Image (cartoon, rainbow, N blue to C red; front, side, top):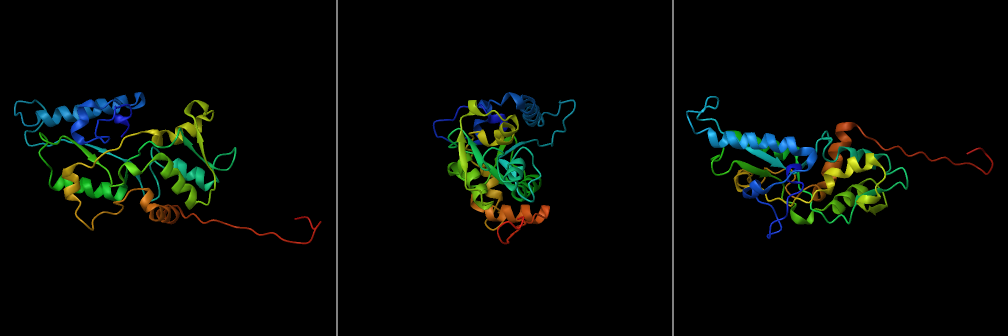
Length: 242
C-alpha cells in the first residue's frame, strides 16, 4: 500500500480501487508506482493486436495488498521486525513498545494465505482488465484497525505492559523509525468487489484482520520459528550469592 502513502483521503473516508489514478506514493516507493503504471498501460494495450509485444489475450492487473502477515512473519516490510522487538522485550529504553504519533491512522492488512487464495482465483477467473485493472486485496478489518490497536494487540500477547506514544519529530532511534514506518501509513482500503466475491464464506483464513486474529498469528509465529519462552526462578537464603 506504500504507493498510496501520501494520497489524500476521499470524502467517503476510505479508498476504493477505482481511485487508483489519484494515488501518490511515498518517495521511497516511487519506482514501485512507475512499475504499477507499466502494468496498467499493458492492461489497456493488451486488446490491441497491433501492439508489438503484448499478446491480444493477455490480461494484466495490479494487485495492491494490505500489509502482508502470517505463517512466521517473513515479510520485513510488514510486522516482522516489530514482532522481533516485542520478543526481545520492547525498546531498549523502557522495555515497552511505541506508537508513532497518536496511533489513530488506519493500517490495512492481509494474511499471506488469503492473498495466495485471491491470486489463485484471479488467475483462474480474471475480471475484465478494462473495467478492473487495479485491485485492492485486503481483509475486512476496516477503519477500526489502527496503528495503536495493532501495537497494543502485539504488546498484550507478549506480556508487555507499556505502549508509549512518541511524536514523529521526537524519534531519535533510526532503527525504530524503520521498524514502525509501515505502520504509520493511513490507507483505509476496501477490498475490490471482484476479489471479495471470489472469497466465498469459509475460504477466509483471517477475514477479520490482524488484530482480530492475533492469537492465530502468534501461534503461527511461535510454531514456524520454534519460539519457546524460558522462565528461570532462582531462590535461596540471604547472602547466598543469588
